[in-house]
Image (cartoon, rainbow, N blue to C red; front, side, top):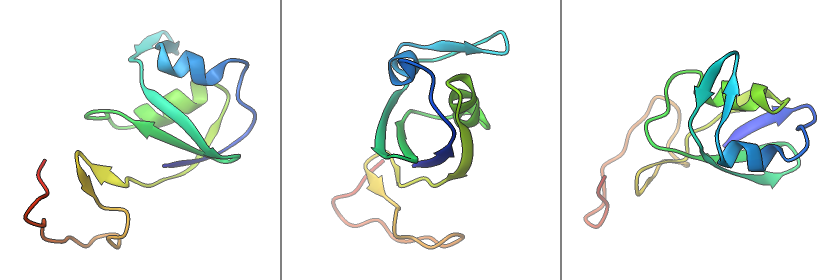
Length: 93
């Protein structure tokens, strides 16, 4: 989940989903959707540092905050920052 501000360029979500370039560097396609008017949800594998910010900047948005809510099939949305939890018997990466 990424909290953003600013106005997205025309067809910004479509551009995210089909790949784009930022400062001469090609960015991979990503699944992105709006959760509300100031929050985007990104689904991607192994994000590199700062890549989500680069995606947002490429479509005219500024990142205010980022929160990871799952890793693979494991939900971590309710785990406090800096904490961990055991996996249940049916969870796996």
